Amino acid sequence: MDDIIRDGHPVLRQTAAEVSLPASEEDKKILKELMEYVKNSQNPEIAAELGLRPGIGLAAPQINVSKRMIAVHVTDEKGEVFSYALFNPKIISHSVEQAFLSTGEGCLSVDEQHGGYVPRHARVTVKGVDGAGNEVKIRLKGLPAIVFQHEIDHLNGILFYDHIDKENPMKIPENAIMI
Image (cartoon, rainbow, N blue to C red; front, side, top):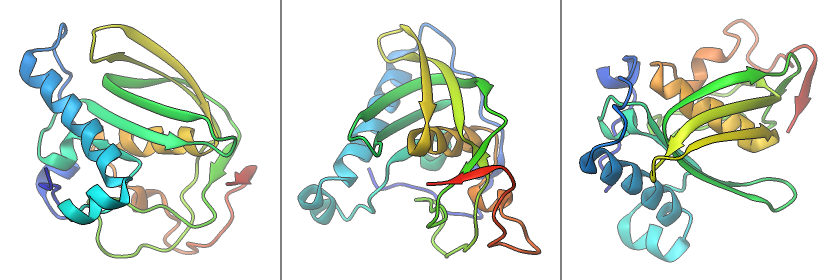
């Protein structure tokens, strides 16, 4: 599956539809494929063989499916793996404190470089439903929190560079931790 759509495609700017639960077999299959893509893209041999760009998260709109589904497979600074594929993920609470990646953010749907800091919440709590139909509530901080916010933005038609300060892209967000 390398049918990732690129910046400029109208689906990337749409608000994705809620997934009806219990999820259909088709929706479960899409959710599973999102996670397989992310995991395969992180395996150098498979990524090279399939021509995949490495990614740590993917949202259904990026494969031209305008539905609220995301897959994240990321390791935090302590080596803990956060691997979740969720239907209808929502941020139910967040910190006032901000965070941003020192390297800026990238996206599998955005080919050109957009330099600049992307302010995000330093901590978020996300609720969603996993592929087996169980409700999941995850407390996140650091890189995993940023990745979940990035993917959930895709469900709302927002791309990471929309958050970059146009006047001063390298302006360090107030009250923010650099990651």
